[in-house]
Image 1 (cartoon, rainbow, N blue to C red):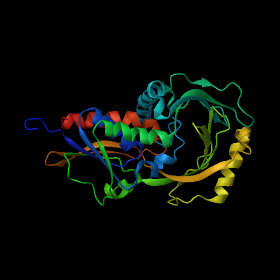
Image 2 (image 1 turned 60 degrees about the vertical axis):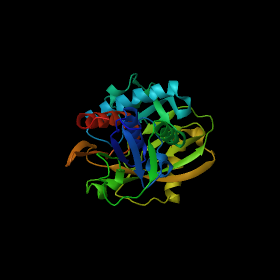
Image 3 (image 1 turned 60 degrees about the horizontal axis):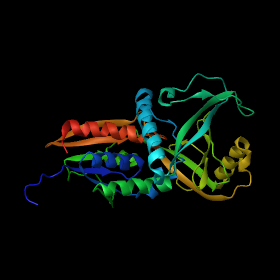
Image 4 (image 1 turned 120 degrees about the horizontal axis):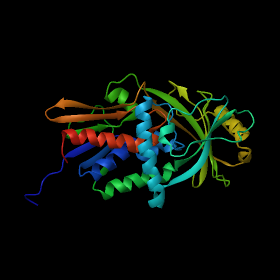
Length: 320
């Protein structure tokens, strides 16, 4: 209708959890949001994630803690008011093989307490309630939320960042190596097993071996068991010997897993970088690119916090 103001068009690159979360926040703020992605949400690394809230392989510590705290609060809210989002608050434990001080991200957790009776082989650890996100449910929920706000999602492979909108949000993950010419981005290969849900309700993490993190994360209909952290490895094919090793170590930690039926094996490539890149770049002609990538193994954990900062950067420069 003539005379109605035109909303500012925003293109978001990437349909993983960070891209979709930024898109939702932008649409909530009144922008005309369109997501372009080579891989649709359930094809992304986000879809492979165990997705327990846990700051992992992401820097700098102060910004990661702040982003994670804000995301924790939003996930806790979703768990309470949006049962269809696939988010549940579950108690779990980070175990340590030596006595260590509180984790650097402790301020982000409302109730962090020492593990009173660590399993054999562990010196201690930390127990707390954390969001666990079933990505097979949550990613489609984000898409539905975006579409209800008037946004769109389109499969589209790009060879360069587009200039067809006043605002572009670069959430391309590892693809930013090419799109942003950022060679500091490297893959960290993560292989997991998904096993049948056997009534497990608590999660466990042992990150004492950097290349072989151990985690057991119960979701709504299955349990994610991991994993690996193989730097510079681009191979997305599951390896049989790795799968056997993952299950063997996980069963020592959680004996109830012994005999659980394996549903599938999956691999994701975490987008690692010396630090998360979240900054605006003015590209001339009134256009702006906001880069938001390099979240390592904590894309879900930081997603809502990073999206809030993306919104702030956009609103400083371009009104909706």
